[in-house]
Image (cartoon, rainbow, N blue to C red; front, side, top):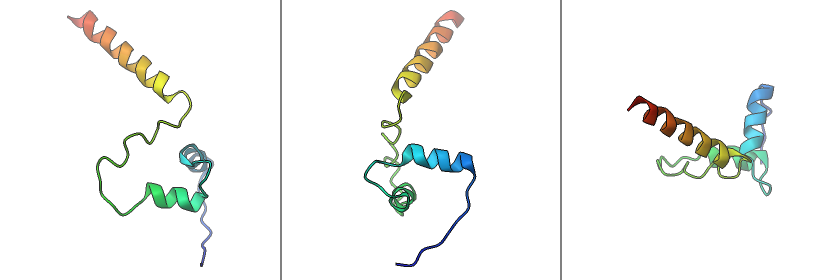
Length: 72
């Protein structure tokens, strides 16, 4: 299999690392994230493996709920 070298910023690399699964190579990760299917449901759950994401999402939702209640 042929390969290519690419240059990405440190920020782009760190983001890719967050999406990379333990059993994947970076090639596998890029292919999974850029798959040819256009299934709008494909991204659901993608952040479930990111530490702290659920807590941050719940906190944001709670803050929004509080702010909306204060307006009424």
